[in-house]
Each structure stands twice: as C-alpha cells, then as structure tokens.
Length: 225
Image 1: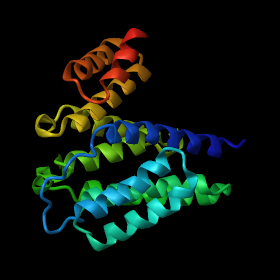
Image 2: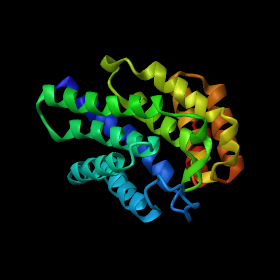
Image 3: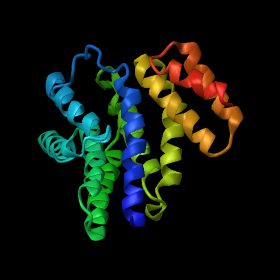
Image 4: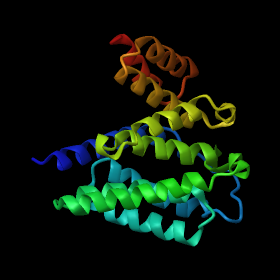
C-alpha cells in the first residue's frame, strides 16, 4: 500500500471523528439565516452527505463534494460553505489510486479552504448555520482538515493555530453546546498527540463538566490518562 494511500486514509479517519463530534448534537433547530446563506434544509442535506462521506461511505464522497461545491458557487460570500466545499474536495483524494490525482484533489480543497479563511471579516462573527458563528465554523472546519493532512502539505502548524483560535475565542461562549463540545474534544485530542497530558485533562474535564453530547467520550479518555 502506498504512503499516499495510507496518508489519505488517515485524513478520512480524522475528519470522521470531527464530523461525528459535531453530528452528536448539532442537528438542532437552525437560527434565522442571513439572506446570503443557504436555507437550513439545503444546508442540512449537504451536511448529511458530508457526514456520510467522512464517516466512511466512499460512495458519498463525490455527491458531498459536488453538492457543497454547487452551494458554495451559489453563495460565494459564504465562507462556511466554501470551507466545507474545500474539506469535501480533499476527500476526493480517497476516490482514486493515482498519486497525482490524489495530490490534485487535496490541493483543490486546500485552495478553497484558504480562500474561505481569507474572506472572513468581523461580520462573520455572527451566527450563521445552527447558531454557530460563521468565523468559528469556517476556522474549525479548516483546522480539522489541515490537521488530518499528510505532513508533506505542511499544514499542521496552521491547523493547530486555527484550533487554538477557535477554542479560546470569546465567541465560543455563545455557540451551541454541541459545537463547543466538538472543539474541546478536538483540542484535547491534539494535546494528547503532543503528549501534553495536563492540557488534555483540562480540555476533557471542561467537556465532561459541560454535559455536552461528547462528554461520555471525554470521560472515557480521562480514565486512560
């Protein structure tokens, strides 16, 4: 099995964990959406495809990537849709055995993620989908994708920086609890990877105390520390 194939298998696995953490409780009634956003039902359908794709259904990858690409193209001012479109595009690397195509799909997705991050402005600090501030959701989506990529892309440092920005942002206080739980869980996981057990305990402990949908997962991880 090639190094590239193994690396992109890991990409899907890590994104699946993040998507599962979000899906654990973010299927809540959506807040009113700005006129420039996709409607709640359209967004929910797109995220269903995305979650299936990162959850292991390779047959859903192309559908998710195409659906999110269409939504993003229809709403070019929406950084959240562009970020998810970029993340889905990187998953297309799982659909081919050709190394150059894997790289091409990954680079296409990264270009979209970079553009989504570049277009963030103060106005995007307002809630957009499911009551989550758009700036936080776009950054968290990019962070998860960057951290899951093979080292050859040199995105890990930026992914950690984005994750730290989201986890320590004052905006997170007003975000729905399931989103906060997903962020804290990911922060704890990355702390463990860095062998920072004290930080991992802090993040997992905060998650358990919050009662977020991911609390049981955090509790199990605490027992292993």
